[in-house]
Length: 358
Image (cartoon, rainbow, N blue to C red):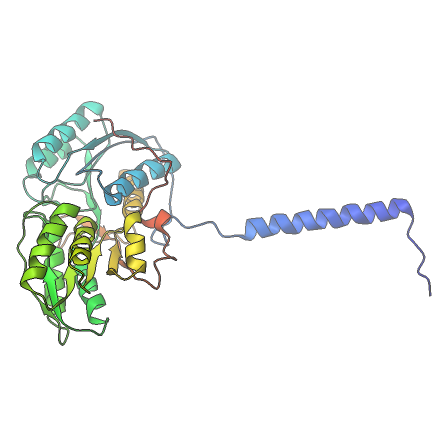
């Protein structure tokens, strides 16, 4: 039976309705897509009631960790309605005088919040007290500083980072001797990671960690020099521990030069380390989510300035003289290195430019 055709006017109307339905469904599908969570569920972001001013000083900008912190602070400030008026750099660990001058400059700038990644663990209490007395809130980011005059910190549990790396070696099911390159002397974060690593490694049957000596600087050259010497003295080594990725990359280079089958574990992921994790030179690396830390600093600062709740911020205790939040460690291995969201955790966009003004 032949079905009668619809009148042209009705056919056009049906076509228009169908098109509208398709567009509506497309729009619904787009709106139904969940927005990417830049805080990975750690906090619900809010906007500031007024344009507070933030000053920032970090140790250096040689790696993605500190770059990520600065990017996270700057980008979150824009999203939240506050202003970053100064970003300063101490230059290196131990450059406390330079950083003291930068912190003093925040008083002249009239900042509401001074954010510091301290170049040393001790010695900051007087300068931070002077900021607090001037009505400036002090926040510690990335690494600890020994002062009760800090309002809060967004950090990471350095002992837990060490323990996580030791567990990664233990779970590799190939026990043996582990060489250690502990890191720079006087850096509390390096000491805590080393202690955590050694304590946990000694609990794993068959692992034999070799005690290392603190000293030297961070960097590829120092990691390569120290590891070369250790490999010559311990030809039966199976692993090398370093607390930070530039030392680890130097260690991996030393291992390759000596044509040895030794794996490295470390912390703080950078782009250059991705292929090294893939091919197994780096057994595991703990992500240090500088971007998330920077974002959390801004959000907690707003809440404290406005007297709002600060979820997940722990009260001062034996581990910290000020309230703090430790971002949980994320272990990057060959099986997840291609899936890890680096743009959320630690690596700023390629087109982002550092806003350093001093």
